[in-house]
Length: 378
Image (cartoon, rainbow, N blue to C red):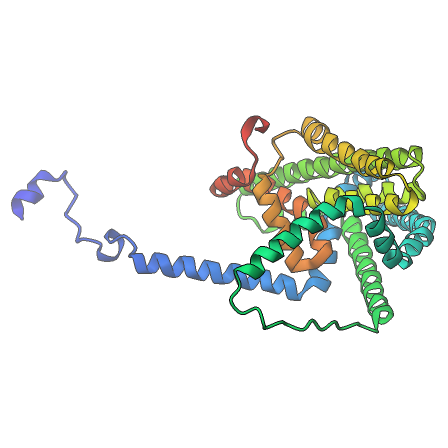
């Protein structure tokens, strides 16, 4: 022991081993940490699912506040108070939505009322396409019947017709109106509060460097997310105008309705275009007798959607904010389960916001890289 002491510099003495610090964490502790993290994530997702009435309007309000925040900030420079600018903005938004709903409500309600007739007539007119598919289906059933041992057992189909459809529609409409009112109230307070939350965050941070970094991160996230939302909204509106004009030139009734539908459904990647093509094809099947004209309507919508998805969107939005296609599909499924149809509309902006946040926080950078698309757009 004295020989060991003589090798040390003067004043240094050998320290006893740090039993707890020298031993790496065991496998059991790692498994326990992963399990606790997984349980926390599941609990969080289920809480979001149960609190849909609160969290969905809040999320939409936050996104809209990020989108509209530059306007009150600019008006503040010319000495317009933020509550006044928020009131003006919301008045314009409410008036625009009210006018649009009044303009489109009657034709939309008419098509919803004629939906059963539309499906029957479309099925009759598209029987030329349906017949080969039915023959393939019958062939498959024959093969399945030949390989089934127990052919005698047949399951009786029982159809339950719900006679309270109008009551369900009234409930859904009431929930939409309540959610919309809640979203507008939250949006007003978010816009009128200005930078209040950022100021509070800066106030509680301990050092000047932390305060400066927090402001830079928040401003960068706000700027990039706002730019993304504005760009994507502009692209979707342009697609809606193109679809509306195309439907009008092809003689489709209520062309503005299909344009607005296309603009809204484009916020749902992949699935939205499929729904839009199916809807306009069904309407065309009811409107026209010529099969070629029916397929032209669906083909035009699909061609415009392909141009938007493969050329316009990547060229304007850029690949820095593009998401992995697998992540998009998983996000649509996940947020669709959590918040229903509203969740599918906010899924992609939410994931873009998460990617931007992770890109600016060094420990979370690998998650941001995982969420992003392949570099070069491939």
